Image (cartoon, rainbow, N blue to C red; front, top):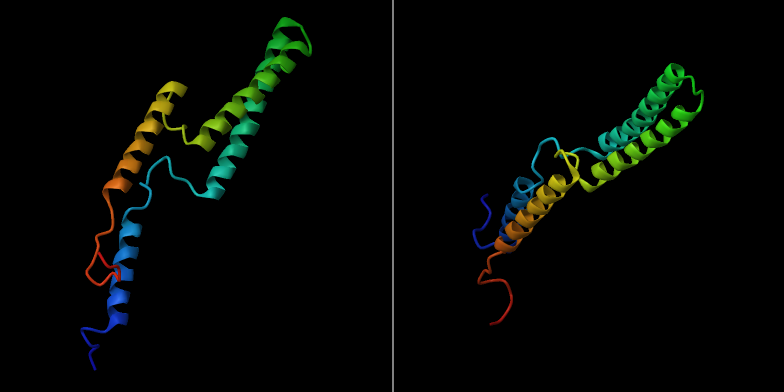
Length: 134
């Protein structure tokens, strides 16, 4: 037996499916900037460890070459830590796609403005049976 064409539950179901379909297609664009939470967390951890290790390694080799035992290793260890913190902040803000902090900020602002304009321009259409009186 086929459902009645004027059945309100079928009409509601069709509208819900249409609304869900729109949100699925309007999800975030796939690409380098979109990562899962686990992937982003692992990336942050690896970037911190690697930046500190590279800084300490460079300082160690400069100390061996110059004969100043702990001086450069400590300085470069802190520089590596600072570089790691800056990388983590860039990843957390979503600025890791572009080279240069100023360029990354401009690109992020342009993406945010485009998404906001798109959200404003796509408004749900009113139907006759929406239940509101005009």
